[in-house]
Image 1: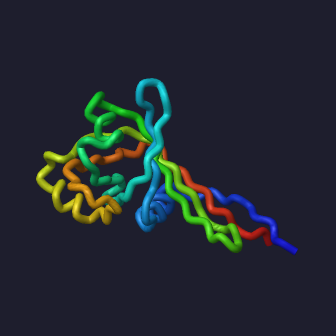
Image 2: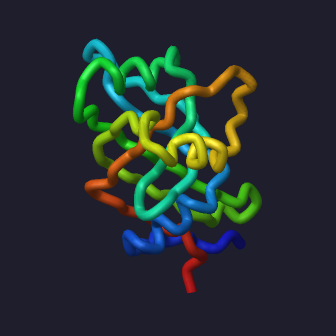
Length: 138
């Protein structure tokens, strides 16, 4: 008999820690009134989420098009057999930090799947962090 699963809230600090260990996440943003979701590799440093991308990517173009772009960033990990795991959702604004003196070092910490030259570092400044862990019921 399959055990029931129950959602348990994760506090924001623990949620950011889980996000920092995730291999990749998904950024959601709006372009021309339509939602767009893109998978991205990231690194979490000092409570911010950093991605390293091409300046020609849809996400980079949206960041450059307007200051204060609001996004949602999500990552999860679910074990296929037990279907237990976690999900973290961050909402906030983004900023191009490519000109920051440490941008190159931050970019190199992001283990990107892309082979194209990456030349833009974007930071997500979290305003709200939430998470759920799916655990087996007792």
